Length: 172
Image (cartoon, rainbow, N blue to C red; front, side):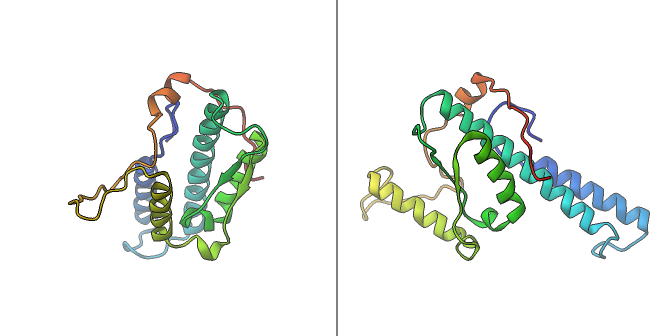
């Protein structure tokens, strides 16, 4: 997971590893599928740490790229974390480490506002309406995009920049 020098998130490999780990442990413990394993907490903690580390490293690379290209304001720009992931305090701490390393200010809404992805989707609509980008008149037939872009795709540029990440002290 995370072997390329870009900012793309992928959790397919982690999901496969966790599934294989659970199946192996079920065989070793001789338990039925769906029964709680003795090491369930360890598996969950390892998966959570891997996700937090992946998110932190990808976010760090994105911030370093944006700084290198002059895309961020000079004085302590915000790093906003929202949605369901923002209600996970472990991940919040990982992104706090990124913010501290890069001089950004981490902003997270209260956890009670971080559980509904519909709010994030609606906010994307508000931002598009404000910018008058991607807004169609009401009489136009619309097809949906399950993975609608939220801006300009800079994946190739980030990859070409080959940004090496400094060590990141995560949660101790």
